[in-house]
Amino acid sequence: MKNRYVRNRYFLMMVTLLSFFGIVNAQTLTIEDCMQDAVTNYPLIRQYHLIEQSRAYSTGNLLKSYLPQASFNAQATYQSDVTELPVDLSSYGIVIPSISKDQYQATIAISQQVWDGGVVEAQRRLVKGNSEVEKQNLAVSLYAVKERIIQLYFGILATDKRVTLLKLTKENLENSKHLVLSMINNGTATQEDLDLIEVELLNVEKKKIEQASMRKACIRMLGLFIGQSLSEETPLQIPTVDHSFSKEIKRPELNYFHAQNSVFDMKRKLIDAQNRPRIGLFVQGGYGRPGLNLLNDDFKFFALGGIKFTWNINPFYTRKNDLRLIEQKRYSTQVQRETFLFNTHLELTRDEAEIQKLEELIKKENEIALLRTRIKKVAESKYRNGIYQINELIRDINAESQAMQNKELHDIQYRMKIYHYNHLHGDN
Image (cartoon, rainbow, N blue to C red; front, side, top):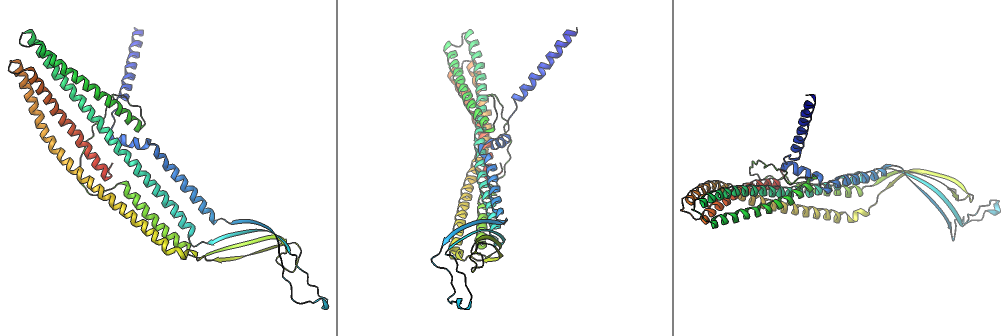
């Protein structure tokens, strides 16, 4: 009795585990999860980290400009002439030493920037702005991945619908086959009728193989995009849709254009900073011959320090053209932005018309599908009573199948168009 209890408990545990793993393996995918996972798994996303690293390194290098700057210099020279007094005072007992024509000097100079006119700060802002442009450009590329997921996801859903409808067609043909068999037994149908049904069943099986192969390829591609190993039977949830036509566009391309305009503003500020004077402190120490006293020809240590004011006026020569170049690039970016918005509005207008058309088609196709089902049932009755030939019955079965397929595929196409419309807006 105890052994039976243990066996039953073990059996229940195994059933529970198998059921759990079955649920995990059959987990239904949603299009939102697929789009998010595809972006996260896309190799290009690692570029974000590289952009941030590059910005940190460049900013760190710029901030080091605020640290004291030190330099070492050594030189040995020979001069063709040296400074001499133009008078001879030897008659008065005064001997003026002569300066050697070979001179030597080794110095260490330390300088500290006090005010650089705002150049380093402007450069730091420009580095940050350029990094933002790179990030927004990367966001544009990653956003395009979502469109590929939309096409792939709804392509799989369309394949699933075709397979479902093929199963329904097969079921109708199987029912007709049983009807033909019973009529053959009663002597009211021929073997040819049965053969025609068999041909149609084989055609259905052939189409199912084609759709299964297509789904297998698409589900593998989807698995690669989202970084998961998906089975061929992985179910996909049909997304619910609710749309409203809006003209506001929130695409990442607009953030990219805005980031570029910000960079142009930063470049103007950098040009202004480069035209300002600079103030700094300096100290210099050294050893050489002569030292600071030119009349002493011995090797001496020396030191000096002070404040330095410099103003480089060379940037003024090119300032006007530099600003013109910036404005030219700003205008070019504005043209690109307007072109993007124009093309996007064109696509939105086209999608709006397509969505409205599909809404009307689906309404009519619902009615057509109901009528085709009714016609097929009448055809079965007519064939049973000898009024219809088998070809006429097969024709009505196929017509019902086609009507159902049109309705279901247009429904999938309608949902895909709404997702594409939202994607154009920047809502995905």
